[in-house]
Image (cartoon, rainbow, N blue to C red; front, side, top):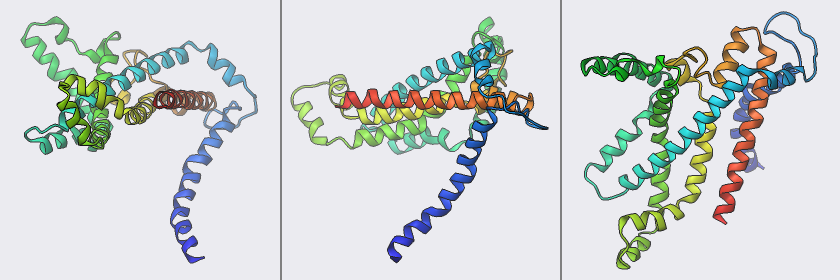
Length: 284
């Protein structure tokens, strides 16, 4: 009996905290999404009106298009770059330990700090170099260009996300038996053939995990948008998370944006389930 109580007592505080700070606020958000609550004052029940208005809201649609496009592009680039880095860092190269530490560095830095550092780089450092080279494109900050500001966010998001993703891929590659690679060398396979026909198929479970995690994380992009563009220029880089925060807590749309958050949660859940199903079918 004591053996059973031990694990329960260890898990119980975490379950309580999770319920109080995750489950309860989520349930409250679902409830308020059915009201006209503005974040202050009184409220009344209005049913599904908020959800009906979301479908007609052009600003909401623009944020969804931007966020989905950004998330898919960032997730794909992150996984491609991380897989190549992991393949290189698992080879017998000089300073391998040092390079692994360097590539993991972005993971230990706060996202908001990274955002402000790159804000300075894009707004000051690169523009100064561009002016020195008399290059008109580089002389203007990407963050101030409505057509190119999203590129800057993608660059920073991929740079930071590659840290953890690379470590996961290195774990997957190192779990492959060395006998398989030795047999491939005996058969005359070159590095490209080894990567495409041995390494990649055997690390597909890790690809599935990384794709699901990265797409989920990139869909929730918030800190980088705040630090780099604050949703601008105009609303060009306004992600859904940023829109929910700004209009929900500062714009008197608490109930409306709660409905947006619920709808977005369902969308992320749907995309994650579809991804898992697709990758599972490929593994089989």
